[in-house]
Image (cartoon, rainbow, N blue to C red):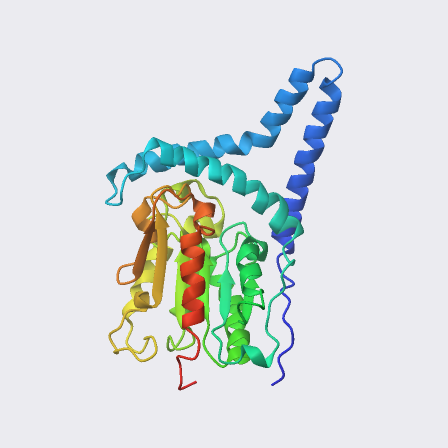
Length: 333
């Protein structure tokens, strides 16, 4: 079958929502500054800064909650400097992602599925988290799209409906996996951030075997829920609450007979397909241990915030190296 270039046409919900939010913010700041500048330049500047950085105060509350909850975790306890650095890093990263990449540059780097040079090279499917779209992965896609260094098929999907059930994302994941497999002749590596890791797990346990996937990398995924989700209102947010019925049901089939990764014993658990990155300064997924899976390759990163974790050099370089080393290893396919 001839493979056509795949372009993800979904993502309108998040894109439009964040375009409107960004435009409203810029308009509000402009109106405030123009109104107050003639009479009080200090009021104009001060009010504008409050408008622009109000989200940073929300982040600060998240970090304070995370610091309190993580005090009883077995992971290393972050010091004050690490919390401040994580807060500042997230403050700088939020507008880049939610006011630029996702609303205006979501399709800046298109999916790569065409070319004989892709055959035999491990492909990748990227799965983002809550209230995001494929634009989240732009720095990763640029690295993979650099033909002078790599030649790998990849798809970055956009999960919709935005606030629907996590189970509803399975068809999108399945289609992406099929397309990358056709382009390469090999099952892909799945790289997931936050809720995306749960979406992949929910899809994977419904498959007859695990041979459709080579490996799964999760970054800041609330495998056992997150304390912060108690305030969530959407369906998928409620599913990520600690101890939720949905999470308990997700964990039940992990050792079902017949569900096993390629070339592994029948008793092999699904979690051994996973590499799970987590941090002690994650302001969304905490306690920190909730991002770990028993039996997985759990990897700790010191002092990284939730969004920050996905773009840490250690995480990106290790995962991209895994993609390169994963090529031409499944001779049976």
